[in-house]
Length: 409
Image (cartoon, rainbow, N blue to C red):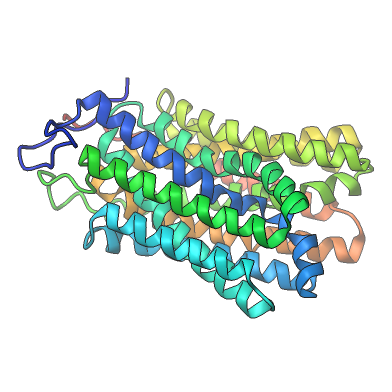
């Protein structure tokens, strides 16, 4: 059962003058976290914009890769900025402000007549607003949910790939039926509406960002040694996993798969990663983080070795799925472990810092894999590097301490 914190007499009531029940408040927090995160998860479906945007604006693939990389960087920057912002402004105001900024960015991209507009709109405004919203919603959810926090956080981090799974075919249809500019305009309206819904839910339920009765010592700077180990575990898993996410179709074709298998395999791997994120959070509620992390890296290691030792289209699908699931498990584990190692008031600040590992991972092994492929026309070298990273990740994961005892209240 998901049980939120007790509300104090000073907390705002709901729309009819009564505070929501504890169970109701937890449900509202989860719903508020779901709606905008699915909409922002379409950033993982960026590939659907590649060909039509290149044709419309006359830009190259390298230009589009730069826009996506910049969006990833500003997304991470927004995650880092979020704790400073939600300590100063009401969450509903921030949700509306970020929704307006992101939708304005998508509108600029929709009307773009050159690369500069695309960089500003999608690369800066959309990414920055999404990062703030992501951490804000995760912090608010962790304030409300008190039990099965691993499952709740695993669910939350699964929403981005799930949003891409839902958004990719819808955006593909909109581009073909209405045109690229109209598709981006519809996405802008969806993001703004989703943030407005979440803001209304926060106001109605009186969801808050901090526990006023929490001791000041429970800050994000505590347990730095634990954070360093968790950072390494997450980075090494994400480096391999983001290589799979960003280049799955190309990797499958390099291993001899046809177009249908490459596209179907890519969709399957993305769905498996979403399921693994949820599973990783569920597992960390039941087992020590060290065991979950080591097992996840071992699974990814087996997948990378399979691709190195038994290359074929069938083993490529299996191997990429194993690598992706290892990354997904660690992603869910990491979010759940933050809730176990640190006080809930510090969740957003710790999570924002941890997601720097995701940003570094996105510009490390994926870029190295592309560089190696350009020179060898194969992914064997990249898979060997991924295997070495997963082996190290498993070793570091085993050093994670036992989870902190559950605090009362």
